Image 1 (cartoon, rainbow, N blue to C red):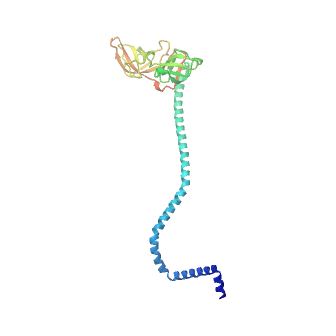
Image 2 (tube, rainbow, N blue to C red; image 1 turned 180 degrees about the vertical axis):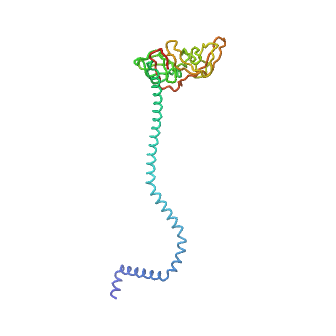
Length: 283
């Protein structure tokens, strides 16, 4: 009785004891009637199972999404690095191709210089084109201080380019053989017929030149090589000018002419040689 009075006075102890008793009863009943509770649990699980699945799936998706955020930043950084590497490789490729082409050009120029030991050749780079004569006048980076003078011939390994029409201190203007002011004494290499190669005229196809004053009875055929004859005092003898595309009789039937395709691609000129001394023959 004393204990009961103490418990009634201290309700917290009473509540604690009641909870212990209730838990004991539930455990006892559950153990004895496990089958009944399992049968009751099945409908409950059937009702709340899909809801639990949705919450579970959403939870997993959210967790996965959170975990992939650092991976996204890592992939972005790797992607930026790969882009930089690709751009660097592209630049190296461009530089390599440029150096390769430059090496080819320099080898050609060296080969020409070695084959033309009797000439004093001055190498020069093409630095521009005169606006008023875009296709027929080029500018080079060598001038009087380099020993360049007016009327000096200009050539490349492929053939004749033109001649100097103006020499400044550090630059020079070169008139191409395609200009209508140009005139070169030339010879058909196979038949040895002489004539004059003139620059572009209205009746001549674009990019070609015309060889005039050829003998009427000359046997000129397509593919004949035309070279400089050395007459006139500007161009050394033997520089290739181009090949015959076609030959026609003049209307007055005293001479004939030939259309010549130049050996040099004037649109792609980058480096040239100026012939400082005159005379002799190009081998």
